[in-house]
Length: 193
Image (spheres, rainbow, N blue to C red):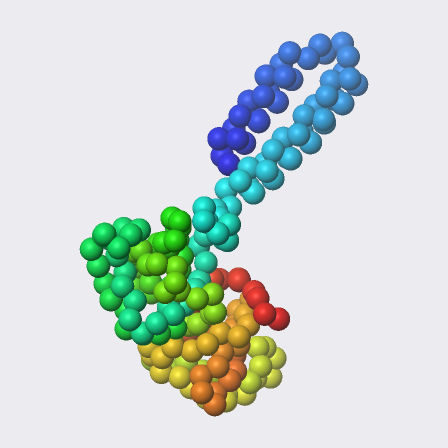
């Protein structure tokens, strides 16, 4: 991205230095054309910087959930690599940060990273509460009312997310949680609405 922008700027400067100043109008037209090409290149560079998984084409990083109450995290992408960690919480939210064929490199709430087979992950969204008590509200914004509280380290299902809150469900409790109260969704990520 930055290398492309730098190259575009140098190209515009070089081109303008070569222009014949006797043809000011033609030079301005050339400059405006080059400026348009520059902005197009900048937008393409931004798109090229967006990372997607090599195996799935899905965005990296992205949140997923553990599909079992026993998931082995390995030091590398394959069963021949030693087990680094064993997760014992089904639906625990983790981030996929890389992909290799059938293996996904994940990162958990504590920034522990390792490789998990894709069959041990599911795309359904979940969150783990990080506050001592998280307030569950009846609506995302406006005149909200408290409908319940959920304690630290409880895993909940995420049904939808707005800019600052997500709609969650845990047993009979359903409502909106501030994203600052849990791990499982990115800052301004929105889905399901």
